[in-house]
Image (cartoon, rainbow, N blue to C red; front, side):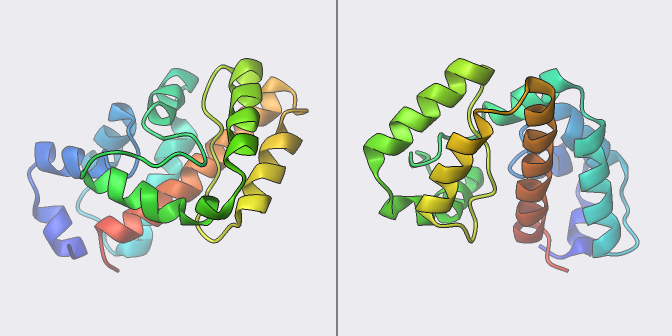
Length: 162
C-alpha cells in the first residue's frame, strides 16, 4: 500500500498491519499513533525510534514472533511469508549446526537468536550466532534491538511503498 493509504487506515487497521513488521503491540501503537507521516522517511524514522524506545519485555514479545534461524515459518500470514523470504539464505546451511547454535544461544540468553537474515548467507548467520554467544547480556540486548530495528525497517518497506 502507498503511504497515503496507510495514513488513511483506521487506528485498529494500522496497528494490525504494523504487527506484521514488529510483533510488539506497544511498537505498533506508537507508530500508528504518529500518523499521518509527511513522507516515507518520516515513517521509517518513527518505526526505528519506536523500536529504540521499547522496554525489554516488549522486545521479547517481538522476538517470540520470529522463527529460529534455519526454521521455516509456517502459515500464510504476511509475516510468515516475509520470514520465509528473509531466511532463504539459511536453506543452504547445515541444519544440525543451526539446531545446535540456536539451542546454545537460547540456553545462554533465554530467547531466539535474531539476525537480519536478508542478504546473508547461511555461513554468515551461523558464524554470527556462534560469535554472539560470547557477548555479555547487556551488549547482546543492544545487538538484538539493532537487528530488530533492521528487520522492522525492511518490513515497513514491504508494507508501505515509498
